[in-house]
Length: 381
Image 1 (cartoon, rainbow, N blue to C red):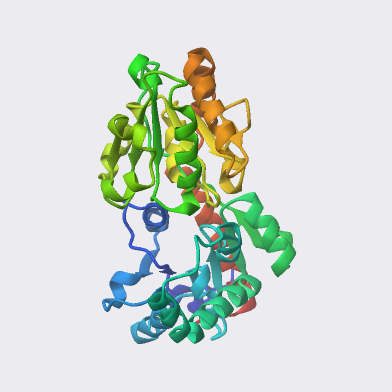
Image 2: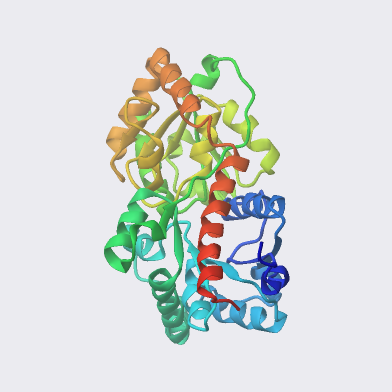
């Protein structure tokens, strides 16, 4: 047997993760990173995260790639491969750092999917003009990283198809990763009050389809008695939400701007129907968690929703922006509890294999496969 390679013995088992998020179970990207970190730690890696908290000073998103690279260079850490969020990919890879790039929803697709509400205010236009060179660096870094990375972690099949068409490379370079669900105890079918309570969980943004939701709510007034609405995780106070919400529903609407992660399951269980009318998503954790809770889920037919919901089997889909169809689906599911119960039961069954440990382990295995290629080729940092 040949003696062990001394270089292999000294190779650090380190993963450097760079993303514009804090690692926390309290946010979407943060929750995914929390579980990825745990999976790498379980495999014996040291996990180094570079995010806004490590940069300390407040900054524009346009600056994050450059500041993150500078921070990494100051650390002087030696790692055989990096795990990079798409905006920082090109800057690191162009300096010879082997990397896997990941996306939580391709930025170029998001920009095309959500048209602006109108011309920005003068101050916003001036800031955009002043930072245009930095945004150009971010855009270049995104494109270069997706094109040159050893591997790309895509968040849904639509993104994977876009990557293949616009960035090329071998098919095995792209892996569509799965998000997980927190365990939910078995619960009784929704009672009457729950059946008539509609839940929306998400930031109060046009990207999330809030205009579609408000239009659907207006259409439902007077058609379905006893409806109630819970708008959770809006990130903005009730007054701002209510300005865009039909006045006739104000008294029957509860707004929860923020809630701790441990209260998410209870919030979902209070409601019978979950709605997500987004124009653009990655692979929405709130939808996955509502499915795990056995709720009847109604979502827009785009992005990660198409990977999760089979129309008429474990939920219902509507074209993005189609408020009339969304209103019709809500009415149908409220008036036919047996339909809502069947969709909810199948939704729950369809995510039973998505324990966080399992899906995060799939990501680690993909990164390790690319790491093996780095070791074979002799590339490193």
